[in-house]
Length: 418
Figure 1 (cartoon, rainbow, N blue to C red):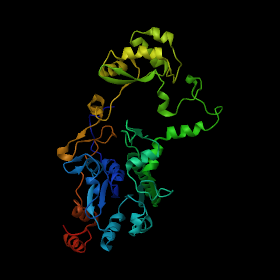
Figure 2: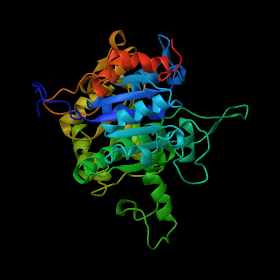
Figure 3: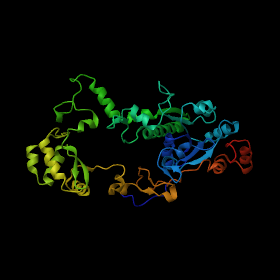
Figure 4: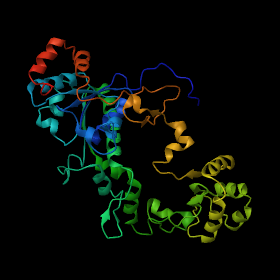
């Protein structure tokens, strides 16, 4: 479908209001709402969320993490230890759809702003708590950071230096992204139900839960292999032999394997017999198909070193782009093997993502990956400074005038006067 013409439809989540009370990475929960056009108000403690100085890189004095997950949000500082600060929070919650508590569970409860407190002023409120290990279990009170959820879930294994010292190898972060994404998805589902029933919800997720759930295939495979061989086997192409779980089972593959080419590596995935035949015809090597026809589905030709040597020679004859173009032409699956530094130079990446430039957004950042056909999602605003939108929020949402704002400021509602 063409995406060249755009409509003037409102943003997908226009009219949805989210109060984002978060620190650090879990603030990504509200990020997803902001990207789709929701009114996201980041309620910050006086002085602001210290995410701005955490992690690396620091871009023009502010962390890339903040530039990315806080874009599209508006900020107000509230001292929730004051009665006036709590009152403002509750008044904002009256017309909000979602309150996100993305920090240690129970923080808002201790301030008198729990789900039970908030639903007295808004019965339809959805309260979403996103934390490290969740609100139950022996680790619920354990302080943690993002990598902990990946190591806990088994998504990354320690490596060892030559001198014997252990270190964490490079790996994509999972829990700190998956937990907020799943939390946002569930919160939106709860809003849909609340609009039908008039009743809100209290939901919670640990980022560790998100990491484990994103790796469900391996975890459940190990669980399945605990059953007898007579009940749980490999697939028919492997003569029902059990392979190692998940991608570990690819190591001995040949028709499904990485190969070096002229300027890097490609992943060859002709495990279906029809794709394998297309490949052999395309390279003029039907002798390979006749010798190793394979099975109809899921046949990786594990351990076939002779075939692997032939394919190694063949793949060195073209560049990544040449193999990609060729794979489309002959209908056989081939993929580039990039890393997070090189993928952005790929022509498909360039076709799918826009870049928000640092001149307008503080850092150079990728656009949201969801595409609404024949629509343009709103371009998110630059991530806010602490309290940047205080007056605008109070006037627009609560209809406060300048005199009331000044009076609240004098009482320390927004923290010490700057």
